[in-house]
Length: 324
Length: 267
Image 1 (spheres, rainbow over the protein chains, first blue to last red):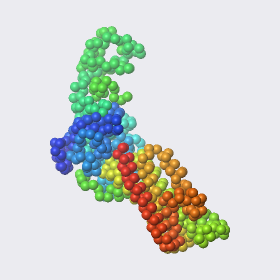
Image 2 (tube, chains in turn orange, blue):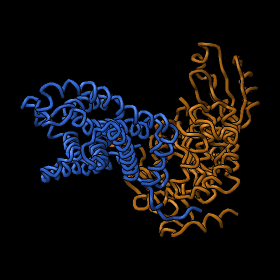
Image 3 (cartoon, chains in turn brown, red):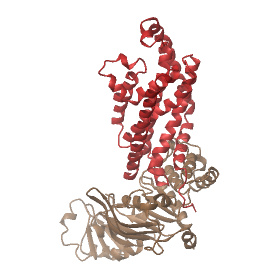
Image 4 (cartoon, rainbow over the protein chains, first blue to last red):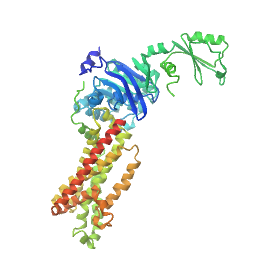
């Protein structure tokens, strides 16, 4: 459905990529001796919602800046919309929408002025900027705040304005670097709803996050990054199926007891992870695991049976939890 | 879909952004643009000038009344201060604080566009500041020649001779400490020692060459020659002043393009 619209806008498909909007092979970014991105491969298809999941410092932002054609590659190949960012930076940027990790709004200007001037950077006429600004204010639910100075707005509103601003050029690809970090739950859900609508319209989304629920809500497909490398790739569901069990049983013991349980948990589940404050038992049937634990005479203080999440995938892949 | 073509006048868009910001505060700035010359020319030109002209001063100034001597110097020195300020804090804000230049760079605006657009804006602002100053000078009867009109572009050029290298320096800084030092140990002493208030020949011989290597002295000398109508007496010297100012602008602009682009690429 959306393929026709988007591919019509792709001008000169490069020889290397077939149908991908973004195509990376051996993509590398170094800062002096420090390797921020270490030879990663990925493709993003038109209309897809693609995520980079990983902890802080995994190389997500460096990757996003290379895709955004603002940071030169240190190695490998990268094409965006069939174009090479080294030679066609401004042409690529003309067709991207960017939501950076830190807001880059002009806090001295009003909400509407921020949209108007941003449209001008793309060479749009003033009349066109005004028309699009009105639509985007409506989309971001900021119409009533249109003439307020940005400085006085809440974090969630600023974030919505940043997203609205990134859409002023009707981009083919929207890049979102940690779009909801630092927002309260209500503001996050409102933002997710807006992003979901964009996805429904066929806008290609590329986002980074260290929130499991965000990746599960928004991404069709994602890669898990750790220490500058991609450690796994797939849909949220397939990653969970591949690297975790259907259910997880969390047992929390009274202080000091967990350390004395040597051997008593063995065989209760396919896999067992010991965290400082609790034990995670990976088995498809959580209730059966709980029953088996009780049958062995274990007396956990708290028991929680839940579905597996990407957090479990990350723990499995790296041995560490995602949000430190 | 957005056209593939690079917007032709990206420098103009950066200029437009500065104009949009300026529009919010222009009433206050216009007011102070008039107030500063009125206060300075009133207090120093008329007040202090009475003593200078009555004493041995007028002879040292070659028979020129102090008000006429001072006015073109103050015009250029004011441009220097305003341009230095405009090239420091807004650049720091755009690159480090609000990071709005990074937002431009995420759009099809390049590093050179950001540097040149800001310099173009500063040049335009200085033309306005110098024009207002000139109106006040004429109103005070402190211009001896109609050539004072040409002191307006000289003021703007001197402003840019400072703005470009200061912008280049600021783009390399993460915090404002060092450019505060630029103001404290650079701009303020220059304001006092570059021939604005008295001829540099009055300074100890050792200090005089210091005045010659700064753009302010060249700008002051040019503007004074125009305002007093004496510029034709030493045409080669006037050309040299102009060439030195242009050299500061050209080299400074080249450096600013490089450092601003670097700051944007580094993020």
